[in-house]
Image 1 (cartoon, rainbow, N blue to C red):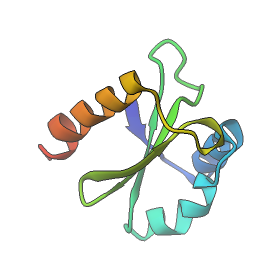
Image 2 (image 1 turned 30 degrees about the vertical axis):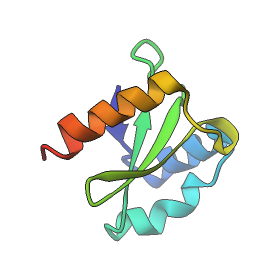
Image 3 (image 1 turned 90 degrees about the vertical axis):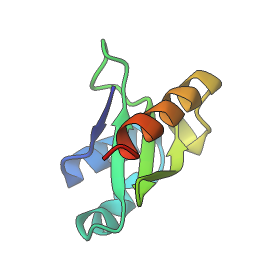
Length: 89
């Protein structure tokens, strides 16, 4: 599943779990310069899987733990999500 970040606390938790800098995006997110989404396994909604930055209905970056790249299956899911959800909005 994919859902938007709802608070600075969620961004901080994502940063901690993923060991990356998404917490520093709080001001950009609050000012509408980007959107931040979290991808999770349905049966583990509190465990970070992929962090997604979106600008102008396009995924500009997606990262896993330690700023790694999502795997092929995750990338395919993100591409479908971008096409069917973001571009349809």
